[in-house]
Image (cartoon, rainbow, N blue to C red; front, side, top):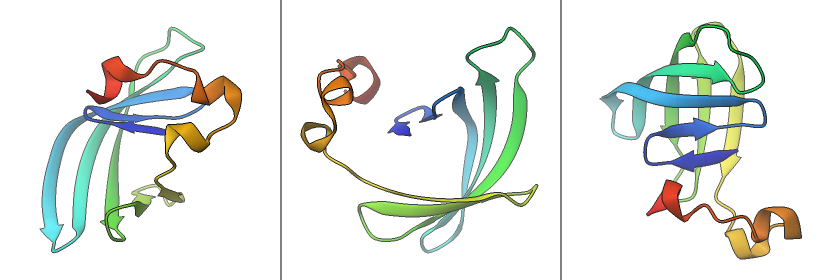
Length: 92
């Protein structure tokens, strides 16, 4: 999973934040437009609640019920294929 300034990308899905609103001290509701990178189908729109767990991790839960947890990993600590991938256009 790659969290970047405009959204979140996973193995097959690219999601762009279209709206973010604070609903608590460390809790945010985000509307995301997500596309399956392996198909040309229409984008799906999801509303997801994010709870920040400090500066380096978060949990998320969608309105449909799925949950996810993620934490920061420095790119230098990743396996070679990810460590050497240039993502500067997504994070700068």
